[in-house]
Image (cartoon, rainbow over all chains, first blue to last red; front, side, top):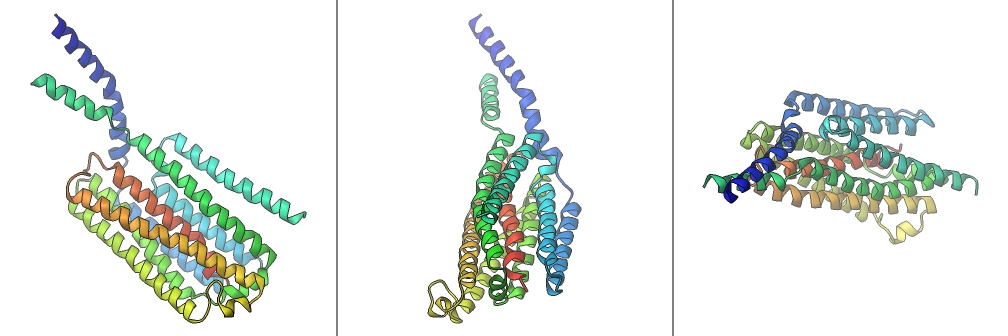
Length: 118
Length: 209
C-alpha cells in the first residue's frame, strides 16, 4: 500500500517536470542555425569592416565619427542577434538588453548635458 | 531497479535550467558592458574636449594592425558560433576543430597586440615616459585611454583563452555533449562580447585620421 503510494507520487512528480524538459530541449536544439547563416553574417561583418576602414580614409569632417559609429552599431546588431542568438531567446532577454542599453544611453546623455552647461 | 532508474532520471532534470543559465550569463555580460561603458564615456568626454589632440594622437596608431586584429576577432566569433552549431548537430569532431581554431585566433590576436605595444613602447609612447610628458594634455589622455582600454580588452582575451581551453577539455572528455551544451553556449556568449567591445574600440582608436 505504502509502496504503491510512493510510486504514484513519483509518477506525478515526473509528469510535472516533463513540460519543463521539453522547454529546455526547445531552447537548446530546435533553434540550431544552419552553418550558412553564420558564414553569411561573417561575410557581412568583413564587408562592413572594409567599408569603415575605407570611409575613415576619406575626409568627411564631422560625419566621419557618425558613420564609423553607425557601422559599429550595425556590426553589433548582427553579432547580438545572430551569433549571440538573441533572436531566438525569450522576450525577457530582449527586455534586459533594452534596459542595459537605455541605462548606458541615459548615463551618456546626462554626462554630456552636465559637461556642456558647466 | 526500475524505481531507482526513474528517480535518477528525474533528479537530472531537476538540476538543469539552460534558459536560466543563459540568463545569468547575459546579466554578467551587462555588468561587463557597463564596465567598458564607463571607459567609453571618459573617452567621449575627453574627445569632445580635445578633438584636435585626439586626432593628432590617433594618427600614431597602426591602422593596419588594428584592421588585422578586427578580422581575426570577427573570424574567431564565427568559429565559436560554428563550434556550438556543430555540437548541436552532434558533430563532435567539427566542434572541437572550430574551438581549437578559435583559441588559435585568440593567441594570434595577443601576438599582434604584443608587437603593437612593444613598437609603441620602443618609440617612447607609454604612460609616464619622458616623451609622453612633453605632449599636450589631450594626447596624454588619448594614450592613457588607449593603454587601459585595449589592455583591459586584452585581459578579457586571455581569460577567454583559459575558459575556451577548459570547455575544449570538457568536450573532448564528453562532459559537454549535444544534449548538455549550455557551458559551451555561455562561453561563446563571453567570446562574442569580447568581439563586440573590439568592434567599438577599433574605429574609436585606430580609425581617427
